[in-house]
Image (tube, rainbow, N blue to C red):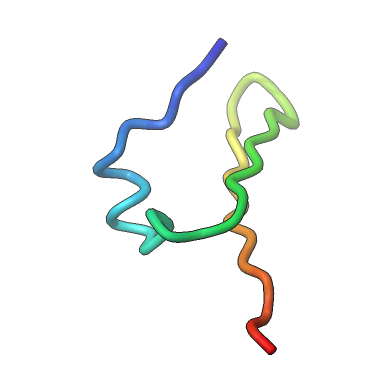
Length: 40
């Protein structure tokens, strides 16, 4: 299991996001996606 340190989220401006999705496509890469929903 991997955890994302808070300073990474802060640098990505992701502390107030709805979701953070992390996938590992291969042994050399980690893909981190920040999801925000539109406010109506």
